[in-house]
Image 1 (cartoon, rainbow, N blue to C red):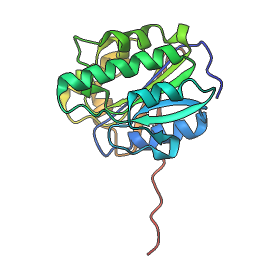
Image 2: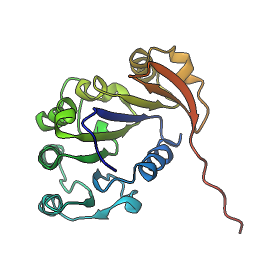
Image 3: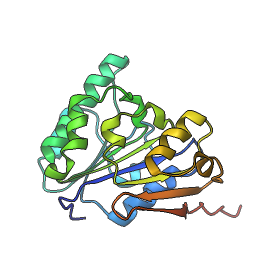
Image 4: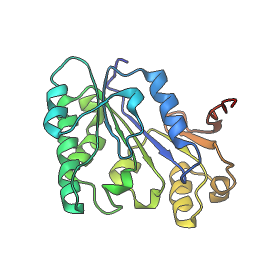
Length: 209
């Protein structure tokens, strides 16, 4: 994939089990990025990169023309993980021209606080040719730097009213439209096209026993 300087910040939002992971994986298969860093919280994206054991290894990988790496935060405390996340964002920003995918963004930011280097990735992504992709079950917990700069959103069912309200306001839809989404069904919001269209995640085929 050739990353252009068009701002690309994609959000995949839905309660657990609704299929946002399926949509993200389908998007990555279509993009075929040659440069990608994945914060793989649950170690579920082995198809798209090799897991490395340290931030030093992530940094070393980005010195190559192409890289496809995954990293899982090692810190055992909230403070340690925040420091790791900030350093990972610094590495991404310095690397530039890559995809940065974050599983469960709400683990690392809050509505009132975006770690400085993460905010830089969101606010300066166009300059650094970054394509940011993040997922969350709890959009009301996400920072405004990310949600405010999203260019595309895929939003599925959200069980809690507070989360539906955040996304409904962002996408300019009725909260009940989000409440009514069936499993694997999403509303796709495109900022530039000013459109909201229904999409369905491809459901995995059951294997015959």
